[in-house]
Length: 321
Image (cartoon, rainbow, N blue to C red; front, top):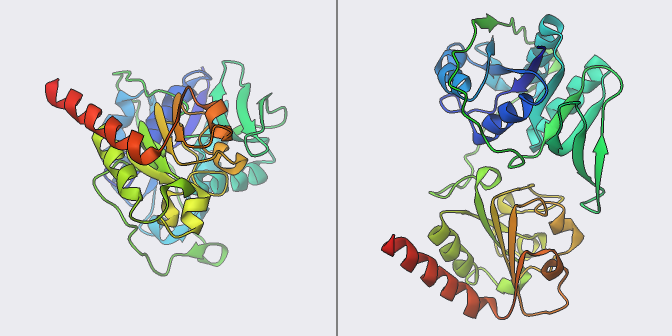
């Protein structure tokens, strides 16, 4: 069975949930093989959890400078692993960084590239959301090794308690002249909530929230559900919530088990980033709002009346469980 290379998203100590999803997707095409790019010792720390989620082999592409450059180390590592393993496909997460890595790798390999895949079958046919969410298509790479960027949240992680094969070392020479060096880092605003693209529950607010203070209702419901907070582009542009929480075509794409939209009309730009959510609940005063047609459960009403009641009910049920 041919290998399917999976680029591992990690913080140096922990593997991100999106990688566990990629390993589950890779199993449909072949034997999952994880590619870890990082400083020396990173792959050894991550090997156990990667093996538990099905990685039959771990390629360690390590360098003391691996974290000092943008994209290039990951592209270099995947290219070298492809040359060594001749895989059936290469999978990466369809994040901003992942899409850049996928595009560069496909260009180097002269291979076909599929972006924003939300499903894969055993023959390599991918289901994609395209043209800003207007269409769902099925595509297959017909030239070279497929490079596929999979939207986070599209697959359920699976545990396969198998012992990973021998760790393979991949030399990672970095050419500073051909790489963009990171000169400074600024910590993103974080809290106790899960990361937006990895959350199983997302509660988002739109223009209908009315302002910065109105987002407290959104945050309270998200906290009651143990979820992340998102925002529409209209809310972000109006200054209601920070840009890094924007969901949509020009923001982040999410596919949680539950997506709650409060005061969001449902412009195509927003729908493109969340319409693959498993269950969608929308609250809006406008009966003509497009998002009400997409929603599995639509509530025509004032979000400031509906959301607090929902928050109280969730809290009460959790307290009673």
